[in-house]
Figure: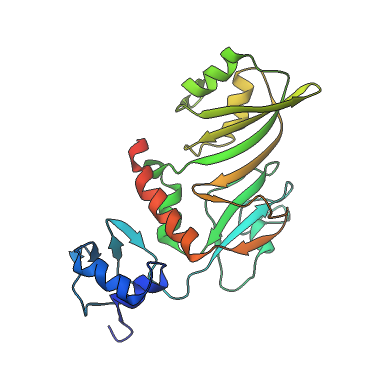
Length: 245
């Protein structure tokens, strides 16, 4: 482990406070390295070692990057597109190479995370970790209370019943209604299919939140780097969401 770093340094870089704070966490027995309770002075290879605090994985490698992107409609959530359409990775710096975490449909806009942190990507996308995602949907018509209740209770789709969703009627204008929906599943076009199932097709769909991360000021097509606290919160939310299953 020629490039091994002290665990305190790794924790400080990952947003767990100063090295003194990291030492306190280690003394309290809350830190583990590769499954073993850490001790002061322990080192870890940041490229292959696994560090956890209270069972929550910690981003260890120093070259990891995390971008929050507001994907516009008409952009595909892939690294390459055989049809030559613009891709979401073209919106962020080319180096280092990053990948989208999950997906947003071609005709859906909103927040998407891109990173080269495979551990976080797996946590956020694996079904057993179902992290909440919030959408603002403009639907045709005025859904009744019974229709909204169906969304909240879960309804049958062609690939099985949906889990209960959190739904709030935000407002109405003309022949359309705005619904805020929070789901933790990641099925293809799920929100659109749920709204179709209650007879109120989606006209416009925006993802406004991924787990604990929200940014109402990020403009369509723009991106920013996630803060250390946001990355840490994503790890924590993905670990806590394990109870959805």
